[in-house]
Length: 150
Image (cartoon, rainbow, N blue to C red; front, side, top):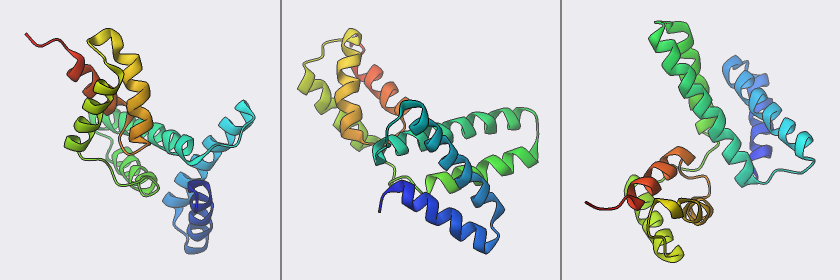
């Protein structure tokens, strides 16, 4: 079952059970998917939907940080609940050691020598990661591994 179908089923279940947070969050995710599909005139595959969900989670985490700075307990709680709902649709997160090993193999595969080769490594690494790690974590690890050793 693809992720869009899971999202639709989850929204139906949330509507039946009266779970307002899940209903609102899943509806927002489906709207974001539909918006991208309409804008690009394509049908999104699971990888693209996962990337979109990760982007939405990232937005929630940024909002969460702002809410913490403003001491807004209501917003903190709402963002944390939405993050939990969205994370349920993503595959199990990749451990840091596995991500590091995967990126090292991507570096070896591309023959990257320094920070200038980051784009080549990112392209290969993102294909291998396939939504199991946030893009910013992949990018930070690639940057770290490509830094020249003193």
